[in-house]
Image (tube, rainbow, N blue to C red; front, top):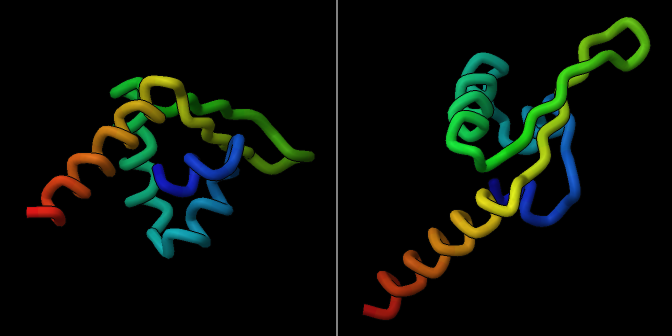
Length: 77
């Protein structure tokens, strides 16, 4: 989520590289975030290769900002 807060969209391979997650683990997390309405996932092809692109939604942006603010509140105590 923090990566998607700073860029418009990201390909699966970029997210995998930056998070150092396994493909299976990242796939599960993407599915959960999509089901929650926090990200939008588009599947297609780049040439002959499958391409999955993720974009954060307004709901996802608001949820992440709330999460960060909650963490800041814990730190102040």
